[in-house]
Image (cartoon, rainbow, N blue to C red; front, top):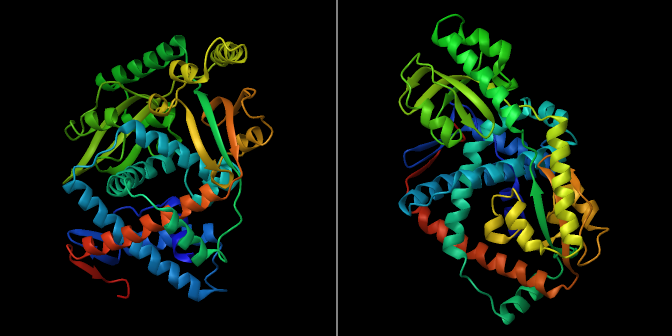
Length: 420
């Protein structure tokens, strides 16, 4: 039983991969390498999350090292299998998961500043580093879901699971079934035009060679992770940035400067510095539209209007979510999050609202780093059978997964070098 919960914990923890530097090789999977620094950083993050001190419990720490290496090997194998199965994920899925992970990191650290200090990088750089990792994780999850989504479990299997593991099962917390409408704070047309105008002006200065790229980046760029270095983002590979940015960056010749490129983060001017195989080194200048008090006031008025429509039952929550929510998955789930364990809810703001909300009622407006929210509590479940059934199904899937990954391992040449 301990094995399944270890697996579940490890798959929820953010990973940080090393940069492409000269480094020892921990393992080779087919034509892919895993650096020792990748394993080290994976272990450090997991050890911190699981509160494992290598000095006090060297045996547990070594076990974590072994698990971490195997997890990285499995991921490489699954990514190769996903290519064979032509598994892909959409940019919006990556961005939604990325923002959720960033929020979780900030929540666990206590503040944005603490998170930056612990990880040694600004949040923007962390976001940039995490994007390809999140994409890989989603691809792997999608592959696993396609393989095991149709797995069912019988009542007898649930009973056998409970009888086997009842002494080690944790206390079962309540589950919430709720719906949400997310309102992201967006700049208005005036702020968009002002940012675009500044970006155009900077581009004209560069085009006419009246200023240097590094000079303008240091002075004007609003990407704190790169502005200090003259906008230098280092070497990147495909999948490391959002689609609009990448399409332009990879189309440039060395020393070319792009026209203004719009993404969800703002307006970019991109310069290609170098190209090495499939990787490119780029600099950029980012101009973000400001969020004015007027923008926020306008959004609050809109949210208040929507909430009043819900309170007076002039509109159903499902309809309002589809019409107004900025959640990228709203058209699929209509804003509904069914039966999530209280312990799985990461945002403390959500917990404080749900803990005091009555079933069937609409919450007050509240904010998180993602934006403003309205919640509706659909139900609270305290029954144990459904939770045990869910655990039993996950255990069955985990067992089938272990068998499947073992079969996949036989298809690839795996060479361990971590002891070298």
